[in-house]
Amino acid sequence: MPRFENKGFDPEKRNRNNDLDRTVPEDENYYGFNPVDLDFNNRQRKKDVLQDNQYNPYDQQGINPCDTSPQTQQTNDIQPPQRFRSESAGDFERPINTGQNNRRKPDKSKRTSPHSSKKDKKTAGKGKLPRMSVGKGILAFVLVLVLILVGSVGVVMGRINYNDKEENTYVSADTLESSSMVKNILILGVDARSDEDAEQTRSDTMMLVSLDMRHRCIKMVSFLRDTWVYIPTLGYEQRLNAACSSGGYQGVVDAIEYNFGIKIDGYAVADFEMFKVLVDSLGGVEVDVTQEEADEVTNHPSRYGNVTLESGKYKLSGEQALAYCRIRKIDTDFARTERQRTVMSAILSSAKSANIFRLYRMAFSSAPYIETDMSKGQLMALVLQAGICLTGDMHQTKVPFEGTWSYATISGNSVISINTDENKQMLTDYIYNMSSADIEAQESETE
Image (cartoon, rainbow, N blue to C red; front, side, top):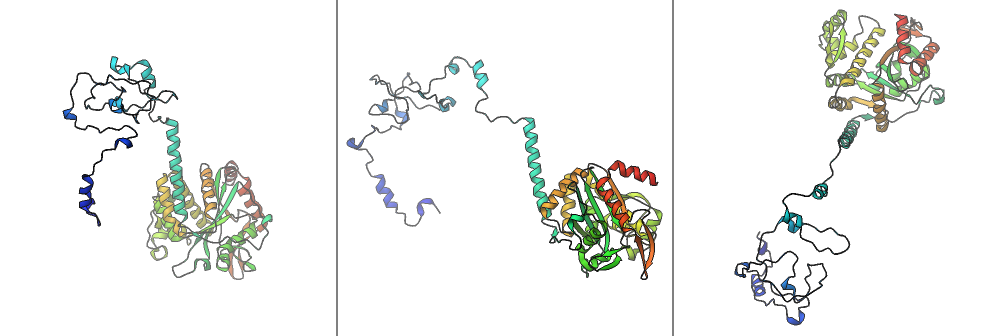
């Protein structure tokens, strides 16, 4: 709608306003304003042109409000008005406020020479935006990158499933071995089908991942599921993996803390689907597959989900890596847990060399399949601690340790009977006291 066709507009009122005499009465002309002649074409052309800041004849009846300089003299030698001319860049130069007379003076240097003086060259950069140094530019980039990373981590954290933290009521916390330089996270792999409650199934994988910041390394310890130990939630001895079906995820934590005396800082649970997503998001993991392992998976499609494997060292997809970890018929549970730790080491190695975008995609894709009792703040701290430890070596072992166990049949069950006290002492020493050099020296002795 045109601006003058609004509702209530009276066009006759505008015509009446145009007929009004807008001349200021003499007795009300307090500032001495005279009508301004805007007809530039009819002005008298003179050779003499008024210079900048010359006395304005139009202000002879009063003070020019646009001129802030004090008027020191009057003159009757009034020159004809300056003819209309184009404005130049000099007309817009701002005076420097010295606290005295702010009256703008002509720039003589511009009139006498087209070249700038040495003084002008020194001050030529003044008034321009300061140039950012290379160091400050890099710092700004890093800060922006950190903000993006923190925001990205926040998005990933929001996709994880969180459980309330529970206390172990079967053992006193002050009797457990712990250190501010070591964080122990229990990784539980649950073989739950779509119609089953994961917490009511037996834990298929129980792996303790220790972030040892003192020795700057990562240590992985597999607990064999057939290990015969006391299950606090049951009140009697049973296979270790029965702790999950009787007490849920916290029941597994309680059983390990009770029998082996080390503090577990939190758990993370993942089903098989998450495992596949994790490996695929990294572009696969490199594993050396034996001919016997390849035949076991390929020749039993119903057992391993129609997956085929070939012998040799090559990259496994998520489906292949999962089938590889589930192999259990050709050898013992010791070999099976070693395959699991091999794949976990390959995942950590791939993550170590992956760029930040691939790592984000991995975390974003796998987060919905993770369940944990750690808070977002604890997970953030854990990420930083893991970053420190990833710069070092990765080590792996199993419980029970060599020379501390034997096969046994208890109540009709084929199980692994262990010396609990020996395993408790050896596990504590491995996690808290041994450096990478110590572990490598020990492994060399046993070979």
